[in-house]
Image (cartoon, rainbow, N blue to C red; front, side, top):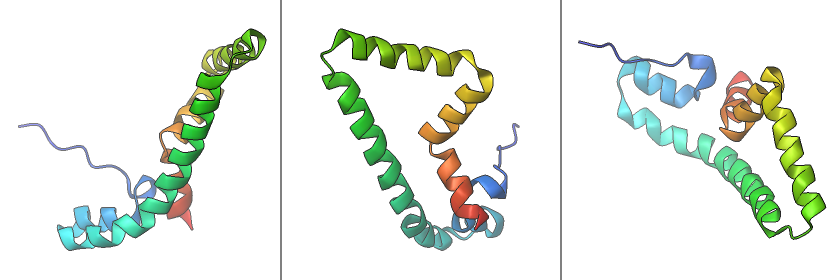
Length: 98
């Protein structure tokens, strides 16, 4: 039987890690207030950025945005940083390191 993959505590909230560690689902009730502001902040920022990109009518501006994404994708370090931020992992790590 395959073992479940358990994430490292530094990349998940203290509350959710506590629920995994002690097996107490009630601990997750504390997770929502910790996670929600981070999620809203990142979702709103990503939504605004995506909306701006989709509404852009200037072909040169669209090309600049596309070139920027190509530049990000071409560099593994920059690509990883972009993915960490866009997936909210960077925010979760920052929240749990304090």
